[in-house]
Structures are given as structure tokens and as C-alpha cells.
Length: 270
Image 1: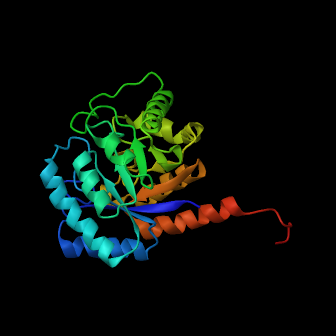
Image 2 (image 1 turned 90 degrees about the horizontal axis):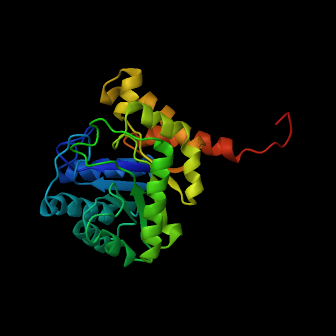
């Protein structure tokens, strides 16, 4: 069954919803609405990784993320994910009961690998990103983008396994929009099923991204139809978790995908 992960950015500068959910009431209301709409996970992020974003300090990220995780955990049993690359944020979030670490840097920051390896029930998502958010969209180049992304993720999976992290706890994300041109993004989407060769589930985030806006010529808040189309394509090509801003609509779309994939031929007149 394909699951939906709701995005909750508690930042002032995320590309789509920056500043919308930085207060307690706004963040909690949004999280509970996403749960009511069918989200299986809520992914809380305290540092924007949009193209051109500037880093925030460890303490600032902790101050943004931890209260929100605690508030949600008190109000709902939903699985919580934290979107971070910092080992200290991971460790503190784990104490609050997060289910998944979602790391755009694929546990390459100091201490991150060890922080996850210490907790045997924790899931994690390893994402591919070429460069850093501040510069990653400045003429990204690949010889074969799908092959290179696959090789990077295979190396990171192996590093995790060697550190004692069970393969069945790992998800991978090709990182749409993270150091990729428009053409690179659509090559990855077109050939997404190849990443299933890695032998771990795929977590995909294309919601409202510029790769969609560039094609449909719509601003960020008018990309729902494009986001649903991309999510459906990803699901049919093997994605098991779809990370989105618009949970209710995506849950409906994934129900249709799930029903289609589960259908069996029982008779022409059924």
C-alpha cells in the first residue's frame, strides 16, 4: 500500500509554506488536519533546503523542531519524521519518539550515521543531493543522471549497513530538484523504476516543485494538479511513500492507485 507523508515546515523561508506554520497553534492545527486527511507520517523540518537557502544553526533548528514534535506526539499517535541532517537534532528528536529520520544529505554529516545506528527500530530516508542548497542549482551536470543517482544511493545504503543499520529500515529518495536540471528531474521520474534495483523502498517528494511549475507555468500555490500527476506516475513506478503538502487530495489519488494495483481479473462482467 502506498502511503502519504505530510510536509510540515516550521521555517520562515521554505519555498512553498515558509512562515505559515511557525507558531504552536498553526503547526499543530496543520499536523492534525493532515492526520485527519489520511497522512501516515508527518515530516517536520526546521531548516529550509530550497535552492539558494542559507543554513541555520544547530540551536535554532532544535528550537524550531522539538516543540512541534512534542506537541504533535501529545495529540496524535501518527508516525513522526524529522527532516534534518544534524546529529544533535536527530538525537533529540529520537528522544521524543520520531519514527523516521529524513536526511537530504544521506547521513554524511558528522555523527549522523552513528545517531541513527544506535536505534534499531528507527527508519531512515537517504536522499541524493548534488552540492549544497545554496549552490546546487547552479548548472548541475551528470553523464548519466539515473545511473549516478543510483550509484550514490547504493554507496550510502552500504555505508549504513556497515554501520549496523538493517537494510529493511532504509528508504531512498532520488532528490527531485536537489542539484538537478529540469531534464534531469524528468529523466529520473521517467526511469524511477530502475531505483527499485537498490532493493529498498522509494520515498518520493515532488510536491509543488519548480520542475512542475516550469512545465505547467503555474505559481507554487497552483500546482496541485501537476503534483498529483507526478505523484501518481511515481507511485506506478514503485514509490511506496509520497511526501506532499496537499495530503487529502494525494491520499485520494493514491487510493485509486492502490485499488488499481490490487485489482485482479475475476471475470469480464464484474
